[in-house]
Image (cartoon, rainbow, N blue to C red; front, side, top):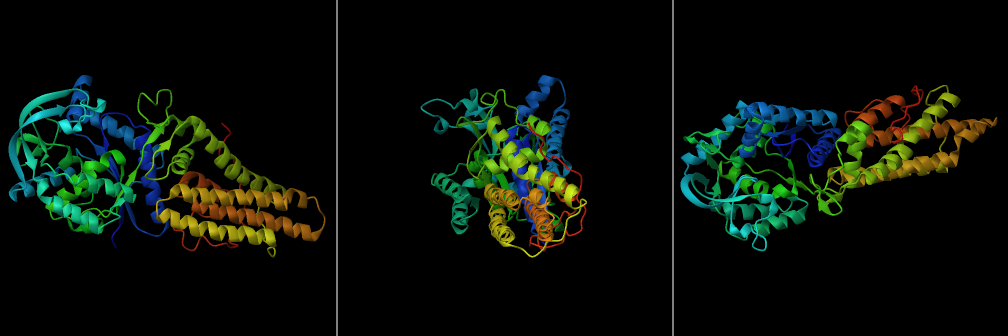
Amino acid sequence: MKSFYVTTAIDYANGSPHLGHAYEKVLTDVVARSRRQMGVPVHFLTGMDEHGQKVQQSARREGVEPIEYTTRIAGQFQQLCRDLNISNDDFIRTTEPRHREVVQSLLQQLYDQGDIYQAEYSGYYSTRIEQFVTERDQVDGQWPEEFGEIQEITETNYYFRQGKYQEWLVGMLRDNEDFVVPRFRQKQVLEFLKEPLNDLCISRPVERLAWGIPLPFDENFVTYVWFDALTNYISAVGYGTERFSDYWPVDYHVIGKDILLPPHSVYWPIMLHACGIAPPQHLLVHGWWTISGAKMSKSTGAGVDPLAMIGQYGADAFRYFVMREMTVGQDSEFSEELFLTRYNSDLGNDLGNLLSRLLNMGSRYTDSRVPAAGEPGEPERQVRAHWAETWEGALEDYREFLFHSALERTFGFIRGLNRYAETRAPWKLAKSEDPADRVLLETSLATLAEGLRLAGNALLPVLPEVCATLLDRIGAPVPEVWEGHMEWGTSLEGQGLGERTILFPRS
C-alpha cells in the first residue's frame, strides 16, 4: 500500500531556525499526524539544503570546512524538530551519498538525452540569492533590496532546456485544477506561464563554487540549487529502487508562498517530467507571519523570539497558537500579546481549568474514579448532540487542511462542556442528600470525563503531548486511529482519575 507522502521544504543551512521554519514543520506535522489518525500510513520528510555559495562563504568566515559548518546548522534544525514534537520519519541532508547519487544520475540522463547543454552567458548576478537576474526583476528601475549587491558577469555554464516542456506544464495544470492548494495560487502559476520560459542555468564553475555536487559529465562544474535541493524529495525515498513506488508520487509538498514560483510549480514538475517521473500530486502553499502587516524578518522581529516561547510555554502551546491563528494559505499577524491571549483563554481557562475541575471533583466526590452515568437529561443530550456536530465538521476540516476551523470547533465544544458544568453544578449536587441528586452528580462527572476524552482525541494532531497527559489523567488510552474512538460511549466508567494537573501554568 502506498504511503501518504508529505514533505516540508528543506531548510537552507545558512542560519538558525526562525518562526517560519517552526511553523512549516508544525503545519506539516499536523497534516501527517491527522492522516495517521485517519488510519493512513504516512511518510513524513524534512531536511537540510547544504550546498551553495553562501554556505561556502559562511564556513570560510568561521575558518571551518563547509561540512563542519552545515553539520552544526543541521543539528539545530534537528533539535527544533525534537523540541516541537515533530513526527518526521526521515531527515535528509543534501550532503548524504544517497542524495548525491540520485542527483548525478538525473543529470547524466538529461545530458544524454540532449536536455542539458553548455553556453556562455553575460548578465547580472546576485550573490545573496545565488542566481542570475534580469532587468525584468527590477522594481521602478531599481534592484529589490533582497537581491543585495548585483554584479555584471560573463560566464560559461550548463543549461537545462526547460522551455521545451512549457506547453506540457500548462496542460498538466489545466487538467489538475487543485495541483496547487489553495487554488488561487494556481492561477498565479498559470499567469506566470503566459510568458515564454527561459532555459534554466543549473551549474556553477568550480573556481567560483566548489561546495556542491560535481556534474557527472564535467567535473569542472558543480550543480546549482535546482537539481540539488529539489531532488531531495525523490532521493530520500529510494528513487531508482523498487521501494520508490511505495511513496511516489508525493501527496503534498508543503511550502511557503515565496518558493512556489518558479521553483516548485515550474522547475520541479518540468524536471520530473523530463526524467520520466510523475509530478507531485499537490503543493500545499502557506503564507507568511507578519508584524504590523510586514513580513517578519530579523529587522521587523527585533525583540521578539518566538522560538523562546517553546521553552517558556511548552511546545504544544506554540503548536496550538500557530495552527489556530493562521488560515493555511493566508498571511497571519504575530505578536506576543496574541499568543498570550490564546494561551490564557483557550488553553488555560477553557481546557486546562476544565480538566483540573474534573480531577478535583473526582477526588472529592467519587473516590477518584469515573462514575457511571445515569439516564441522560436534556443538558446531557445537548452535550452529545454538540459533540456529534463538532466532530463531523472537525474531521472534514482536518481532511481539507482547515486546521484553524477544526480547532475552533473543538474548543467551541470544550467551552460548551464548561457551560454544562455550570448548568449541572456538581459542587452543589454534592451537598444534597437526595439520591436523585447523587445520580445527577455522577452523571455530570461522567459526562465531563467523556467529553474531555473525545476532545482530547480530536486535538491529538495539534497537542500530542498535552492530550496524552489529559487522556492519562482520565484513564483513557491514546488511540492510534480515530475510527472506533470518536463516538460517545461509556468506556471510562470505573477508570481511575489522576492527580490534579495544571496543563498550562498561568503566564
